[in-house]
Image (tube, rainbow, N blue to C red; front, top):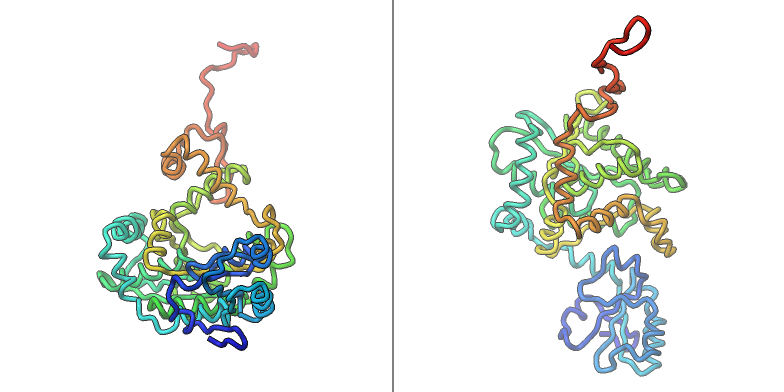
Length: 392
């Protein structure tokens, strides 16, 4: 530890006894929610906390921000108050680089999906169930496994690797990562996580974030459409005939409910579908039966940290404290489902199953291949009119 500059390197901090210090993340709440060092206490206004007597005086206080460049003045002010304070050199970014570097954990993570009973039954078996039930993979397929950097797509990549290891029939995989304009630390997290868990990614860059940042109405919808198009295009360039996306069971039920509540239509997220713009290409969703809570449990059990939504719109609204703007309709739908679940524990299964049990005889109108069909089109009256116009 450098007493003169009152700095501490990541290595020096990790060598300290755990009961000799308290780690404080002095970034804002939004940045903290996107990811922090395990065990760190979020305290953006740490000087006020010191004035209120809320900080310990019997241990070292180690502060960090994003890169370590803004902590020195704060730690100096705390030292003037008589506290043994240091700031973490290179900050959260430096810790993240060290956390990911050189960790050969791929096999351990893979085994958690096949050796741990919970994950084998609730993740791997449900993954293979969807593939078999919906005939998602055929011999000779070349599949672009699309990785956003989040927990869902990273898990999907490991599941595909495990499936490939069984080698029951020939198919090929390309692990495709599109960078739509991530900041440096988010790009680094994706690359290092892929290296750590043993997924050989192919990265290509686009400027989607720049294109949609100034869009005020439905930027997320436009961003998703553009990302899908770029993934199809790049997958085809790689010789693939399918792209695999990491949408899961909870995405399905949320999309179903969102369509009814905000779209005024009954629709769902299909387990697979053919592309209308890229002939011969198909989209598959092999996590169709996997619950999000199981994915989170797998992530946490393995001590993994993945990227959350990192678009500029989400980051900026959160940093501005504009909670209403950052709350999407999908989040509103999640909250509604959780509220309904308190009185009906089967609500999620009922929403999911409703899309598998549509009674077409009770539907007023529906679309098939873009053509609207109405129940009156083939409705036959049960009575005939007389010559005078009266009923028989």
